[in-house]
Length: 68
Length: 461
Image 1 (tube, helix red, strand yellow):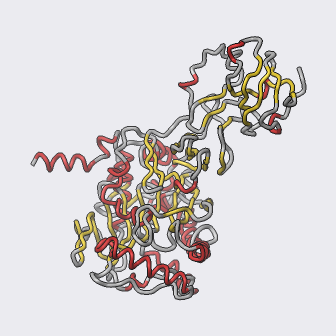
Image 2: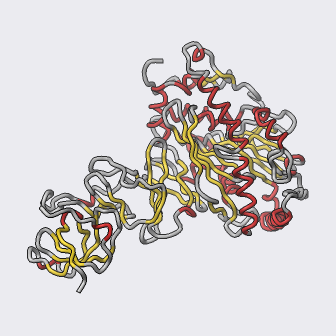
Image 3: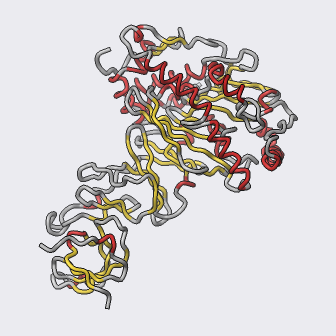
């Protein structure tokens, strides 16, 4: 299990990797430390999610990747 | 008294014929518990003011009875009142007094709700719930009815309750005096500063009956009058019209609302006030003239302390405030006081009034301190076994109220006692406790909407 990431500090535009292998880009951050609003860029498990915006749970964020 | 009851409040504990009311209704644990179900879960309650949440995503904490609620404006601009409790395990989903947000997130397990109350985030929804939880069923609990009346937000948990205007009945004009502008324009009130909140060790009905129109306790404020905290450096208030008006106790018997009211003589102008601050004095003189031009005869009515059943207090003249007496157990009340000004009043006027309001009201206000002292010790001295055996008396003015009073062409609906010369009556308190007993005994709003029965009977005749 990876170290927990403090998602409260993540800015919109930041890319994050998720536990199921997906990659998403943060759209907005309510700064509650629990949720992010993000758009899927890659989703090997469910390709239909690509392009969709969803709430991402803090426990699902496993890595922070800088925006390209 | 040992167990909860749904009968015998009237006349057993509330004997209006003799004007005697048992101390039990103020100190008894079981009666207090019944009040939460039979009064606070059914009546319309004041939650806050729209000026507290001007922008989408704005929210403030409030309360309805013992329930913590969120007053918020959703992203589309609609106002909501939600129970501040997660549907999963009950944790408060918001623990700030006020702010702006896109979601309310429960810190316990992470369930998250939009500002429209919808459940939008469930951790491990796909994994743990296998995408089967019906999120549409688990949004925040919303009040059954809400009313934005000229910016004042009232709500009830009871879907069967009458609409808020029907609940007010003939009392509407007195809430109008609170919320309309000093110049008579509709809905000009806005909240000045924050809400003051403090605890008093007394039952919530002590302040409720006090603000129903207790003029008998003026002796308590003698020291404040002598100190001259009013805005012209004399007495408590600065209302010269009090000296030329008829002073009334006005009660709306079917509703349980009551107030003090001043009615100016026909053709009489309001005396000059605020002599210590010329800009304020000129502003109010201008507003009074505008009000007479806009409202005509209606400008003769001048508001004073009053109470919307059960726990919302009005003070529509000066200091212009509203208060809510939140029950916190039979022996404690959390007082919330809201301060109002006209939203387009000059800055200097608002600043002057802010100082005056603080000096007068709230936990550090000189007048409110007098009241708290009385309620605190009256309650404490009524809790003992011996004390409970002896009822309070509310006999002043029994049988002297007139129906639909009139003064120089101004008709005042309700049960009215002119107290200009007699100084005091206890009609407002009897009106309050009559309604209290009705709520405690009635099973539903079919019984509580007594005015509908009267209207049906009149139609049948």
